[in-house]
Image 1: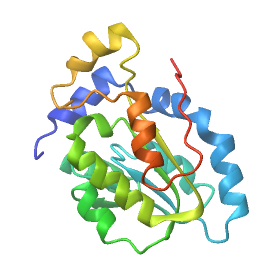
Image 2: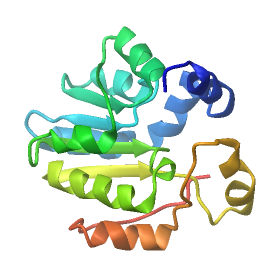
Image 3: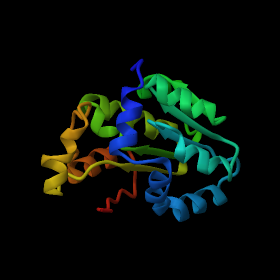
Length: 185
């Protein structure tokens, strides 16, 4: 996208930076545990948006990188001194070395792509993730009737409802061995 429409949309419907960081803090202890146990840890945030998550983790480790295909969001992230690849997520992941990333996060992005693209995305994540690394994905829950019937459609760019059981199955079949899902809200 070339305009700032989605940036304004995110500010209105997803929340401001502080509320996003508060919600994502649920993952802090898990990520701290992983980065303590890996020499030279590297965090990749796919669909990094305004860069809130990367900015937070840049305080702890020097190797944080984002992927964002929205030009305005990528520019905002870079203005915070963050390293952001402005491109399609699958293309960007394909350029990463095997087993080069310690933590991959994908917050509210997988519902924006079709299933065939989702499979390619997860395959590339599996390839790029270190054996002792983790991948965290957050997406709207279709098990919540309000989310699946009303809130999901607030965002015109949502394409795919994610079923947690079939999604976990897909991830397991790509080689991830400890797949768990939680309903957070």
